Image: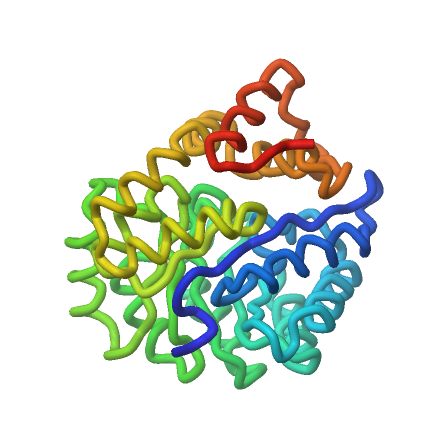
Length: 299
């Protein structure tokens, strides 16, 4: 088992309007996840708003997270950055601070070539012995890690996992079979896109990287554990409870929705980082109903 196996929970990073981390709120979110029994916590992923934080604030988030999780639950840290030297700096800091795993997305303004992405990953992987997960997130990076590039990246000594988007053909079993044939034995294949958690885990994915688990770990763990155990009927019943939340995620994006839910639950009063806008007040009743469907009482 590695930090990348099982159910990973990705919390938001509550900040002030100026982008300064709200320590007490972040620690409260992390403490809830530690108590829940998730397999790993992922800070500074897309849900953690890494792209909207300064390098100094990102380093502070990681240090706070290590202090709350060390010896209790595995911790992974996003180290994606526009510049390779910044990603290396973040990776080295994460390794020194005590992160158990790194998550790297090929972030860029100018579209990247496959050779550029490989060189970027190779430089970051060489900077630290900490295990590294490829973050294949074309919806935000506008770069798709092809199967051939994934196989090439898997030759790097510390690269041992991939976080995949949901397959376009809605057939995770077929995609997982193709990836296993192309990747080294034991290479971890995980997915994100919460409404596809049940299908991907039932299909044999090694892990799931979840936005919902970062705020609602208990109901998501019940769903994830049932799917990992191969309980199709049980996981389908649990997934039905999530349907209102999945609808909101698909309609508005998970980040806006999860901030609205966190505010309703009074876990933070932070808003999404600008230029992102908060979910309009007119949609708050739908968020409230989605939480209630999961047995969560807002307020």
